[in-house]
Image 1 (cartoon, rainbow, N blue to C red):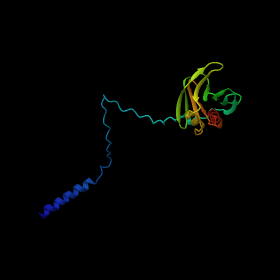
Image 2 (image 1 turned 60 degrees about the vertical axis):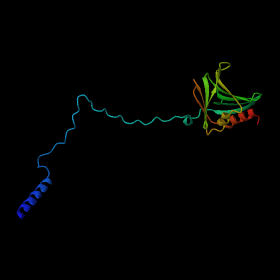
Image 3 (image 1 turned 90 degrees about the vertical axis):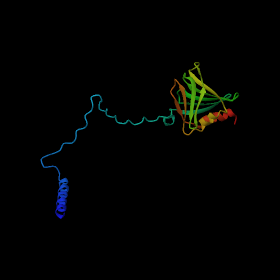
Image 4 (image 1 turned 30 degrees about the horizontal axis):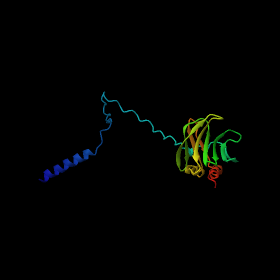
Length: 186
């Protein structure tokens, strides 16, 4: 049994040593070819590179509309006007003290609704258009309307949007608050 055991061990040792040897020299094995696609199935199309998301252009990120605010007292109220000095006003807030109403007047013929956006949120007001003496869109509000306070205290800017007209992004300067306070009788 000793001889049998020795020859079994030698055979196992040779088998193990044979598994450690690489392929014979001069003979290179080729990599496996990719599986052939069936004629019914087309190869997958390459994926396009991902595109960056378009930048968000919220009203808060838009540049301010060029111009400045001016204020003046009038018979029966006051007015704050925004526009380029010497140019046509783009927006005005007019107080009618006897009725305690404030008119937001946007130059140009818009359509339907005037949307006011502040750092507090957005509000849509019904608006009318007037062709004479000049084209304008008008929204009239009670002087106690809370959105007027939101305009006056909006952080850095507020926006006025009317369908059919370019949006205005305006600074909430003191002239706006002054007209509101005049109309409230304070």
